[in-house]
Length: 456
Image 1 (cartoon, rainbow, N blue to C red):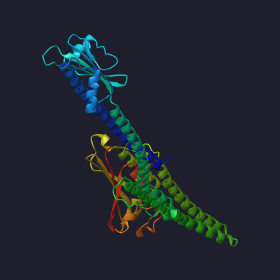
Image 2: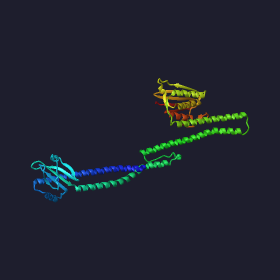
Image 3: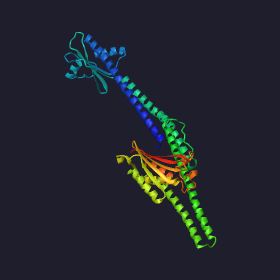
Image 4: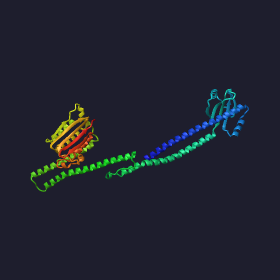
């Protein structure tokens, strides 16, 4: 069952239940009102007949019927029995006398009006106070409220038919209501189905501003924006990777073709092989970097952090950089050494964090005039700040927003070895650790990368 049908059914059941309760309440309260009115009428008739009997001991049943016909107050199956003060029946208008127990007679004489039923007839038992203040009589009046019951039956039929008709109307209205409620969802589905990889820039609209469906459309649009960014990034990644790989491959191909054009000296072949080996190493470095980048993206979904000391990871990265490049200098400066070593600990992935620090140190040394990087470690108010500062040519302000983009290289770094992957990889790693990375640079003065690790 689809949502529209469920909404229609629920709406119909809800409104139908409310209307059914209303009909039942109407029927119940009308029946109570009819019964009360009829008992009141029986009370008045019983008192009237008792007064006639009290006034004339010789009055008969036929006399009573004659008086009722003259006043048009005859009731169907009416039977009235009167008990005197000695608990004897002194008048009975019906075929049988209703025998009351002593307790019921006593209860009635106390002034309590007793209502009961006998063979689907209403029965009322009341007292009649005599004019001469003798012991009160007890009157038992039995009758069928035929007009009232007919009206009650008619009301029941009207309520039932009205309820059934209203269910049909409510069902139609519910279907229209559900259709109106679901229409924006259908529009969203239609619009989303029309969006493919080629038109991710299109947006979902519902013509509303602040309701839940508008929020759903906004969520879809945000997701489409992320998908578009991911598609563009993937496209650029493939394009740049292809370009970077094509260059060394073209050089290798050219070197091989030239070498094979004619017989050469052994030394020439050796030089050619060295050139090819150099290009292959560059390709291997590029592929390794690309794999690191891909692994970082995959690692983000299953990484498990442990408590590590940030300063120890810094020293490990320094050792790796200087071992790989003996000409590089890395100087680590402490603002202060905290008394509690816990202040230097954070949850993170030690291997990934070491890679990020190594990239920043390697970059700084590579572009620094004296192949030196100064690393400043500060702890303040539970915040760990690490600054990697070089003394190089710097980066222009209009290029700063792009330094973390994959394969991006500023104009001042084109003459240096590299692929523009290290900083993109570093930013992803730092972000995964829950930290932030920013860059400050001044042309001719150098560049500083600032990392901030918040408390646990």
